Length: 404
Image (cartoon, rainbow, N blue to C red):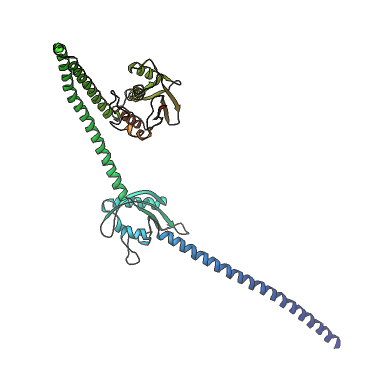
């Protein structure tokens, strides 16, 4: 009996020890679980704060989108709109129900239904353009990109779209097209007018010129030296007026694309021909620094371009030994030409003025003030630019580009 009691006591002791050990383990695990719970709670609070912040940020972006955003269910009922959509359509879905069909312009209804079927079939569409009604019965033209929203079973449940109001843009484009048409018409009328005026002016000029010649031939003995000098001045004035009329006519034609004849032009041959046309004094040398390219263009206009620039350099040359140098650089999309002289130079204040009609430097008797205006017009016709660098008493360098 005593032995059994001892065995029972030992067993009870072992059980107490085991229970105490289990309690210690449980206490440790409970502490770990509590600490983990606290960490999870803290992390969850941070996550909620972050989610709230991001949601607020996204809501701010959503509300301030420049373009309208519309979310609708699969039946076309609008369930969400941003501020831009409310302003565009005039509806507030928090106050009234709205179905997308209400917005469809009557004549675009079939087109809208076809586009909706495309949305359901393909899952999205872009560059959809149509007219829509606003709440106050106004009509706006919009551009829409839309996409379908599906549930986890891949069934369509909603659709969303970004809507941009392009009414003002289209109106500006229409105005621009009208302005272009009107401008083309005005240019044609000006060109026709220039032809008519030049014809009407040349006829009396030739008559006056003929009369002056007849007077000189028939009555030369009746005039003294001063009188004959006056007749010569009249002849020179008539010649200058005819040159001016021809230059104005050339200017009116210079920027006209309708009668452009594009062909290959060997600029080396062209420069040689120009040197034979222009009266170049013996003390002035015109030469190309290197072999010039063969380009594509209208020969008459390209000749006008080079002839005016070279002719001006020759006309204003004031040095005992004049040098006019022509150079070229091949650019990727354009030809760059350089015409350099060692003439009197041009003051900086005239650098832009000289390309305008009737603006010239000095009072040379053969200058009409139109040559460089023609040059600029031809350069712009070939989508190029022209500019110059100049130093007084040292010379001027003209640069111009022509699109290939």
